[in-house]
Image (cartoon, rainbow, N blue to C red; front, top):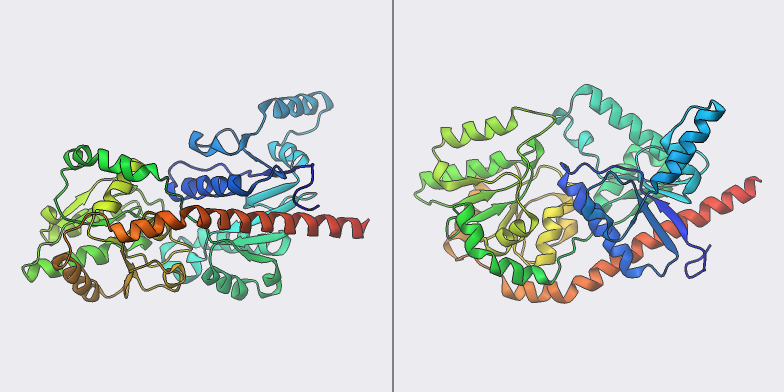
Length: 391
């Protein structure tokens, strides 16, 4: 089947997105918007109803009536009911699934191979589970979506015999043009609500161990010893399912170094507040030890803000403008960068970067959508050609 035909292919996203995984919710929100920009009616996307409501602006909800009917038929025929059987029966493609199902085209998504690079961050049972799940996807899926060429390199090492199935889909974070006016209008409110200092760096990462907040805290402490008081605002979930004690460790370090006055820990905040903090900080910082394709970096690129990054291959691949890099294990190097930026910036919007970002926004989103659309039809056509050949 080719794009532009009258029949729409039904693309089902069986995953139920946990609102606690903010990066995942934002990923799919951006994906659905990008697809809507290039969809000529040849694709009909569906998502389970028990997802955050913000995801449904550009996709359809699964019809509950279909499930009720299948449940009824199973009850009177004595067959065991399985919700996924109903979905598979209705779908032309299952996209971004973690399980491969027979009798339909399956596109699986592997966000990253963090567990191979940082095995100490995971329990042994989860390492085994991830390896088994990824191996099953590599073997049985029709297509594997990876978010970066860095992840593609990992996939080629992990499952070299299935490397031909891999496709790279760099996601793009959409910033509505209204964000600039909205964030200007809430300036006094946000500053008062969170008792913000006039000048600050901003780390918008979840408080997960691999996000490497401790390096930033160490850099703050080093500068304080030199008589340089920098302020850093942190936001994001304070819960890490892999290490329930991690946030307490953060608090202990802050107290140990006596940097309470230099730090703001905001927890989860509204997205408009995130954008406000991004625009008005001195620099965004992403000190992460590992990323598949960083949402923080993409948001900085899309909103138009300079950023300080851990020197990871994927961060270099994302290639944001005016970025500065440091070794994620070298807090002294980060301290030098922070001191230089602090002494030479008053904070506030990077207006030149914002103009460039706004001008490129729509084309970047369309490119994202076109790439995904191409992956969908390639998978669909190949799957159907193979099935016909088998018949």
